[in-house]
Image (tube, rainbow, N blue to C red; front, side, top):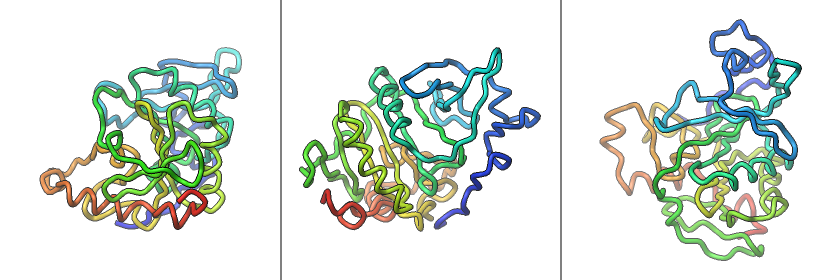
Length: 248
């Protein structure tokens, strides 16, 4: 439990093995299921090597096509404005996918820029959470049980969403960005509670915050209840008023 070790950012230590096709799990050995050219990048979609959604769990990685080869330039897991704009486009073109971005120390297990999406077939708990107005127009405050964060409408302008994302990244504060249904959620995270004993065996990341608790431990599964979930959410998230006071 607690903060996990830093994930190296060097290409030679990338867990996607983006420069080493000799590795069995190298992304260079996998055929993308789709490639989509958006405003800023060509995105390749790959099935996850460790899927948790049987109807579809995908990794989206910026790629470059060089002749007949797909090349994956190594970039660290840092969300830029162009990457965010492409993510919004992917989300808005989809009718059945939940998209999310896990920052380092907020659930990311690979330090190579990637987005994730899963098949979205039922309403999740975070979508029913209440929100209150913030100090900034077009931004709401998440009023969930235990969790703290910002809420945006599906069609929010990229510059409005990127402003708090950039603020968190500039201050080395982890976060989860969840795009689902008609809302987008930005949730600041406590790196000291990347893994919590209540959900031992895995990190608390975007899906857990959205309301889908993932565990391979039967004892953990059977012990989870609504009060314990609320307690965990309060532990792993940071109050907006502390880290983004201009909104709260």
